[in-house]
Image 1 (spheres, rainbow over the protein chains, first blue to last red):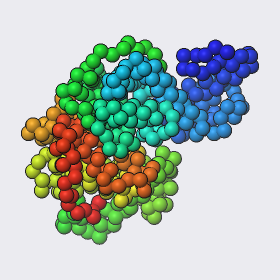
Image 2 (cartoon, helix red, strand yellow):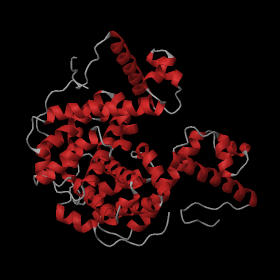
Image 3 (cartoon, chains in turn yellow, orange):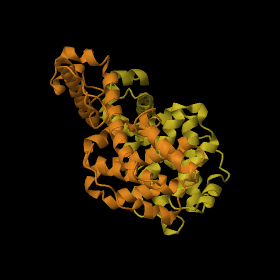
Image 4 (cartoon, one colour):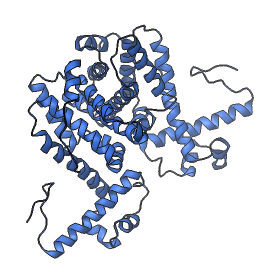
Length: 217
Length: 217
């Protein structure tokens, strides 16, 4: 049982591997539909065709289209969350860790428009979810508040405003990909830090600090 | 030709009035579908049934479902924009006017969940639109920057982050209506002011100033 990068364990037997592969093909196809917003009109046949698997195999893995699409969105958020956690664990300051997550999310999303589309179209429904990015962001906001780095009243309001702001920046990056520079991503992070109560000059400094190199997700 | 509150002029003849009434019935029905997110699967027959008008009359007013739904979303945003402009014109300070618009939008949306649903589900696509709330918010942000009240780099990024944050607060208010208080709406406005560069204490003061009474939109 080898652990993959994302922490999932690979099944052992050939049948199990094939089953996992079929499931993943369905999820990958679902990500494509989610990104193009054709998920509400796509039939299960459309999905199994796109995944290049038999129609009948769908119900071995998912009880409904809705379940598949929810799984696909959660997977995008979870992958991103795991990556940001890994990178963030190397940073002590909660404000620096938060800004790094924001800046890397925007850069990754700009580099991967399909992922950005999934986040923009479906992320709003997950901003107060129990898994994925939401609990991680809430944890970071609370850590920042506890250490005195952030000044927030109700952490869930701060979570909503920061997540919504981030989704809007991704939306803008999709509408006008050529107009989005790294400097603009950093400016967005700076604004979110200010929103969380970090003073102006400090927010600028934190939002322009060097970033770790990333080519994952 | 009497001007209505929203600035539209009422048509003169009986036939013109009936035509305008049919058009408005279609738009009102579309708002219902938009709020429940059944607009992508609703047929034109469903819409004319809900509007209680003849199927054939649809194409006298709109060339497609898409055109109708876009008109309906634009109408919500334009109505809200006109109201906020009217109320904001009584306020000199750009920061105060901006905070008032944010606080009133959240209060109105909480009081009118259908409007909030339309904004949350479709508002993201309009955050850089040429009409409705977007150009008004951009104007207010630029006025605040020009007067030194706001400190923003790229106004369109500030527009995106504030609009996204606002939509997320509306989303949270729909998910948990009982958990949203006026104080939380004001906290969101305070965070947006901070984001635009208003110092912490000032942001608190501006975001808790008395609001005009509103029962419109």
